[in-house]
Image 1 (cartoon, rainbow, N blue to C red):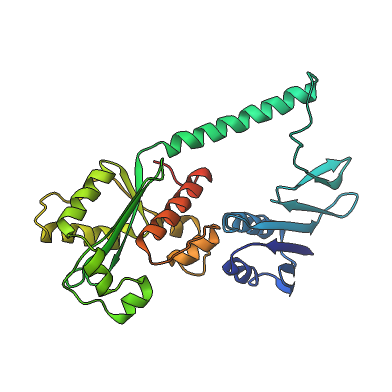
Image 2 (cartoon, rainbow, N blue to C red):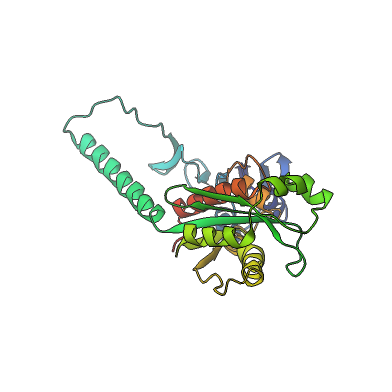
Length: 297
C-alpha cells in the first residue's frame, strides 16, 4: 500500500497521478505499485511539483513499524532512529537568540555564512546587464499591425522605459478593451516611432534582452518597425525567451499563457496587457528563475 499527499501543486500533476492511484480525498492518493515504479514516480513528482508544491509519500517496508516515508517539505525532516522512521519538525531559528562559542554556535555561523554566499551569488547574477521588454500592438499580424506601446525594465536597477506610439492604424474595440489604449490617448500622448525606437536602443544599450515569447512576437514587431522607420540596424542583442524555457522545466502546467505561468510562480501582475506592467512582472519571473537555478546566462 502506498499513500501520497500533495498540496500547492499544478492541477496537471494531480491528474497525472490518477493513472496509478485513486484520489480518495483532495490531494490524497492511494495505490499499490512495485518499488521500481514507486521510486520512478517519486522522481516524476519532484520534477513536476512546481515552485511551491509539497509532497509526502508513505509506503510499506520491512522495518519495525512496517512503513516508511519520503517528503520534500522544508518544515519536516525524516530521521531514522534504530530502524524506526520519525518526523523531525524544523522551526525557523530565532534571530534574537545570541549564540556563544559552542559547537552549535559555530555550526550556526557556518550556516549563516553559507546563506550569505548564496545571496551574494544571486546578487552577482542580478548585476548582469539585462533588460526585460514587452510591447502592445494593434493586432497579431506583423505585416499589417503596428506597435502602440513599448516598455523595458532594467534587470539590476529596475529603471523603467515606457512609451506610447502614435499610429495611423485605427485601434479596434477589442484591443482597446484589452490594453486600455485608445486612439485618442495615442493622439494626445503618443510619440513618433522613430524617436521612440532610438530612445529605446539607448536605454537597453547592449543588454541581454529577456521577454516572454519575445522571439516570435516582440522582436518581430520591433525589427519590422525599425525597417519601416528607416533605422538600418536591427536588434542584435543576446535574446533569452522565457516561454520555451518554462515549457522545458515545467511540463505539467495547464497551459503556457503568460498569466498562467506568473500564477504558477507566485508573481502578481497588477495591470495585465500593459507593456510596462507586463515587463515588471516578467522581470520578477526571471529573477525567481535565477534564484531557483533555472535560468542562468
